[in-house]
Length: 288
Ligand code: TXA
Ligand code: MG
Image (cartoon, rainbow, N blue to C red; front, side):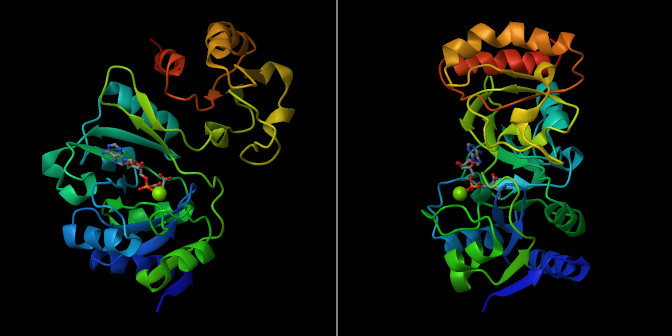
């Protein structure tokens, strides 16, 4: 039997207790629902693979409450800290060197010397992580091979009786998995393009877009396409990397000159010229 509990102080406490006891729990994040287990407990993590019927060589993302918590489990250099400060909490997963002393189960990293880690932004996920005080390994809460679940109903339909407890927090606002950024090379590489970073766009920020943005919303209301002309530039509406590279510096300068304090940048594929563009953007973000 699966228990579906609407998120509240007591159900979050119940979910935290189950996680501490080595059980698996589905919970909402801003991207998709996660199927979580204590990342320090190999037996608990094994239940995730069994419930999803997932090949065990596929590593899992670790979820923590804060950047400070992340530093117990992974090595974070200045570049990683800079990105964390910009994008956490939020839909960015960074692949970083594992700290052996942190005790994350080898099953989580599938034997790799690295960990994928993020701080989710969903208030229920954050409360759960704070309450449980443990790193939580969580893939998307769906049976392997099925689409990621974005509602409690999808989770229940996909995992059936394999999931004992679903913490229900409505539909996920982003609805797309996090961006996975490999920080192990000189130039960060996007392994999985994910949730558009315009979701992080607060009214008042400027947007450097890439690709069509017709359906993109802005946190707090409104549509990205309705941004004031001096707060919005599009590197390439058709998603052409050459056009984007050619426009990069002049558009950054335009937004800068228009007085942008923060510029949200949409995902640019980490392939070909996109690698170079992402590298320049990361440098610009870190001020070097
Ligand atoms: O939005 C999300 O990321 C959701 C929510 C629940 O956080 N999680 C999610 O997890 O989508 P999952 O397991 O479905 O996808 C994890 C992705 C996989 O593509 C996996 O290969 C990659 O992250 N990944 C995890 N750890 C990695 C590592 N150490 N090295 C390389 N890739 C890694
Ligand atoms: Mg998945």
